[in-house]
Amino acid sequence: MAKAATAKKAAKKPAANKPAAKKAVAARKVLIPARHGKATFLKKGQSIKVINTHGTQVVDCWAFNANDLREFMSMEHCRVMWARYPPKAGDFLYTNKRRKILKFTVDTSPGVHDTMMAACDRYRYELLGCKTYHRNCNDNMWEAMIQAGYHPSETPSPFNLWQNTPVDEGGAINQYPTVSKRSDYLVFRAEMDLVIVFSACPQDIMPINNKDPKAAHFQVV
Ligand SMILES: [Zn+2]
Image (cartoon, rainbow, N blue to C red; front, side, top):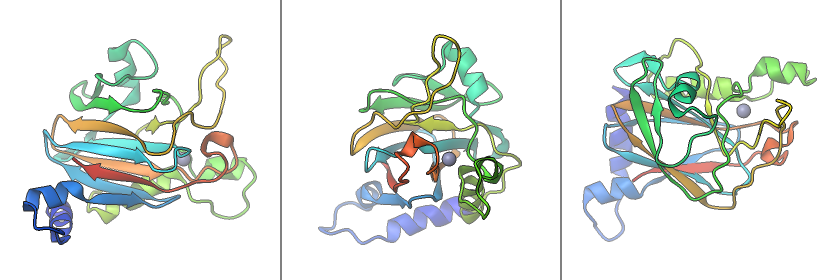
C-alpha cells in the first residue's frame, strides 16, 4: 500500500551519526517543488510541519481519511465549528462528517490563511487568459494523491495556507501577497489515520505568490 511505501522510502534515508531510525524518519524534510504537489500518509497522533521556505508562497492543503477517501477535511464544515473564517493555532480541523481530522497546533506566521477560495484549476487560468496549459493546484492534488496510491473522488475546497485574501467591510475579497516570512511554519497533528496533500500554488497572474511561485517543504515531526 502507498502508505507503507511512503514510510519505507523515508526510512531508507541513511542517518548521519546513526541516530535511532525513528529520528532519521522524523528529520527528513520533503520538498514540495514549485508549482507541484506532494501527498503523504500520517498515522493518528503524528504531526507534520509545513514550511514556507521562501516566505512568499501559498500552499493549498487537503486531508483525507486514509480508510475512506469520501471523508475529507471540509472548510465549510470547519467554519461552522469555529464560527469564523480563518482558524487559529489551537483549533481542530473537521471533516464533511464533522469529525476531527487534524489539530492545528503551531503557527509561527502572523496567522493569515484562507478557507474560502477554491483551488486554482485549468479553467481559472483559461479565464485569466492562458492559451496553453497552466499548472494548477487542482491537478497537483490529483497527481500527488495518485502518486501516493490514493484515488479520491473529488477535489474538496482547500485550506489555503498563508493565502492573504481577506474580506473587506463591504464583503469584497481582496488578493494580496502573503504576510509570512522566510521559514515560517505551521504544525498539524493527525486526529485519525489520514493522507495529507500540499500544493505549492502555481498562481503567477494574481499577486498571492508575489507572481513568482516557489517551493515549500514539509517534515513529519
Ligand atoms: Zn493554486
